[in-house]
Image (cartoon, rainbow, N blue to C red; front, side):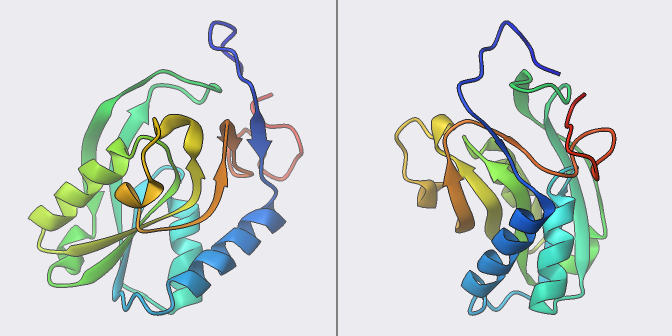
Length: 172
């Protein structure tokens, strides 16, 4: 679904193979992070969070349901992050946890999630597969996220987004 009112200059469609490579690269970069818990941000952050949990050998896992977008459309409207709840968060108290999302731009979702984790007694380390530099407004990505695998300019579509993630068409 494309919102014609919001033109898209570049769309980056990642394949499963590319995602596996990015996750491996990110796991290698996190080797010395010494995390003992993983928290995925629902919805799209769950896939890379599970992948990283396995790659890093870290079993304690929790989910934060924090949303900004109102639809699955390309360039969908966004609002302030809304916390819709958590699953397994009590397991993260006293842990250094890896907080994972799929992509970061302005950093509002990661910031909101970090606040929730700190209030729950966890010490968050942030990671995303992709940094979208179009949304950084000239800021250094390190001010927003601790670890990431790649940078892009434009909209990102992951292979799990769409009605059939195993087909080539996304948002058909």
